[in-house]
Length: 480
Ligand code: UDX
Image (cartoon, rainbow, N blue to C red; front, side, top):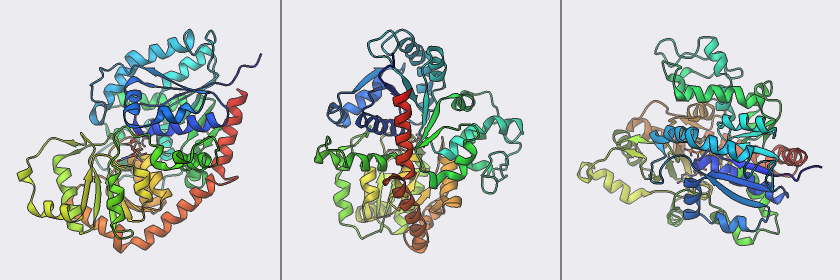
């Protein structure tokens, strides 16, 4: 007898992946597919504290949350340099519990409501082993950028060809074994963990496992649209033929929800669909209302990246010296180390009072959509990048880890929608980049960003490529 479809969505416990997967969960629920959203206790608690997810999802009787331990004490720090401890905790505790849930527990064929498809983050290779063991199809949802994922999938080839680990210290050597990127990708544009001298480390192990497992899955979901990433996708399909590009997921989500009669009008406003793991300060929007059109530089390094106190001061000087208004997100814990207030030069304090707005977390999509924003100084996380593209906001990229080094190269050299300042942190460079984006090169960047944003909008319009891929995904899940 055919089983009722039941998707188990299992995100990496981080801001970007959790937001992307919650959106996919809601899109599936609207299409009549029952969903269980499995997340760590820590993420679940944080979502309950800062968002209205419970109310939002209560309108779907085919949705439920389930939680699992990440193996760390409640008060353990989980961002920045401590992220590897989450992976260690999950390996120790989450993996065996997940296996038990799938083999004989609440998701198994013996349960009241067996899971018929598993949709985990692309980095959860262990989930593939379990899904194969219980013969349940698995579709990875890789929430990093396709270009970075492509460098992961090419890692075995890069090692075999002797390109990784790097032979010598020159980071400007061109990379030859990531097909489609030969003319612009340098060593420094590969994910930062490729810079390690020794392959025998936990991060390389995780990436190599991912490179082996992703092609074995039933399919691969990506948060991109075809017109943006086709030059990479064309190569990726040789390894993973069944790819669903359903991005930009935040735009596709909004356009679908806006058409849904079951969604109350008040919840169609983006401020009411926050998935933030920090308290959002919405007063920044009234501050933006008082600024000149396209004059403000928005600064954020996302949910995991950090900077030293010295780097923090270089940014601060650069921003104040640029003379442009700035909205700066300083996430708690994002600056490593401390400083005394009397170390802060008077002109920084005065410049910030006159032109700055500093806060701990903002509703970023609403900020980027605000007409006062003229540029985004970003760590080049994939969600930030694609959100900026959709709002036509040019970027200054200061990448730190994961996919960010690759993304910033695509921003500057492929899409030509911003400036890549990777591997530098200097007040003069920051000042110049801000002036370039807001004034000097403004028309060049806004035009190229506008064109990409329009292609993105077309992909989520009727019969757009992302809509068609989402429909194909829904059909596949229903038939598995
Ligand atoms: C990092 C990687 O760079 C990313 O590509 C990967 O998918 C997950 O790990 P992160 O540091 O979280 O991600 O950055 P990003 O992918 O840009 O996601 C940050 C999210 O937080 C964005 O959706 C952004 O809108 C949101 N955000 C950020 C806010 O809502 N408010 C803020 O103040 C800052």
